[in-house]
Image 1 (tube, rainbow, N blue to C red):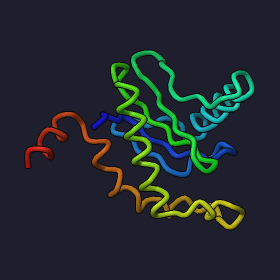
Image 2: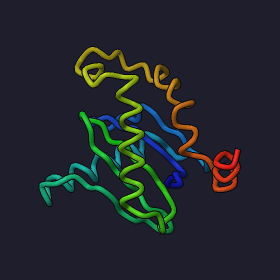
Image 3: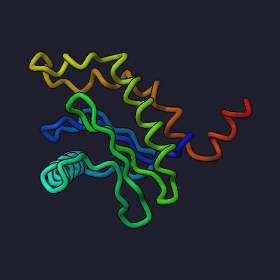
Length: 137
């Protein structure tokens, strides 16, 4: 399983509706705006969604689904195929709990409803030692 340091779910309008990090927190609004702008730029320039990019010692992976961006920050050495599979699994977890029509003009903007995802996503954000322990036990 891929090692995720940070995970975000961002609407197409640039709102971060869910985030989880095992490192220092960053400004979610700034990050969500940056990711949305980068994805829009990629669509304008290449007529395709951005799937991954590197920045410093980190790699960011992105999956687009139902007008949402699922974004994970990992170590730069993380394998793209493995991470894309992990993000797709995380996306499936999200849509099992929240149907895609939830965001089609009916959602009131309350992001606290997404805290239920913490338990579902916790295993994806374990540090390497915790992952080893959980796989053994």
